Every structure is written in C-alpha cells, then in structure tokens.
Image (cartoon, rainbow, N blue to C red; front, side):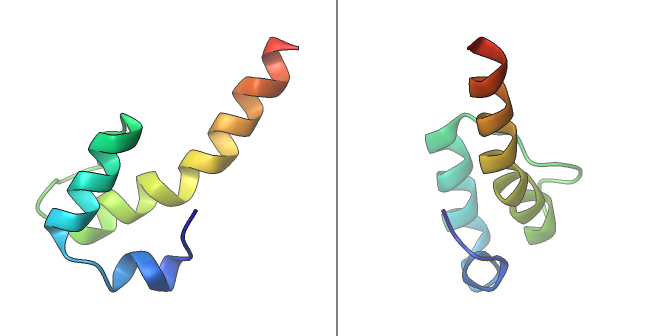
Length: 55
C-alpha cells in the first residue's frame, strides 16, 4: 500500500478516489485528509485479519 507520508502528500480528491477503489469510507469528517488517511492506513491490517479468519 502506501506510507503515511505518501498518503498525506495526496489531495483530498486523490484520497477519496483511493477509498472508493477499495470500498472504504473515511473515518470521521470527509472534509479532512486525516479521515481518509486513517482508513487507508488501517485497511491492510484489517484485510489480513479477515483473510486469516476465513481459513
């Protein structure tokens, strides 16, 4: 995925597009970059846990 620094350098529109691509919703107010960054940073760990639970 991306590092926090890479995500923070993106615009809100770019972050919104990434969240849409992965089916994520922003955490908190959609007007703030941190809402998208938080969701995108957490996504890989959540996805891995879901895969492990399915085994």
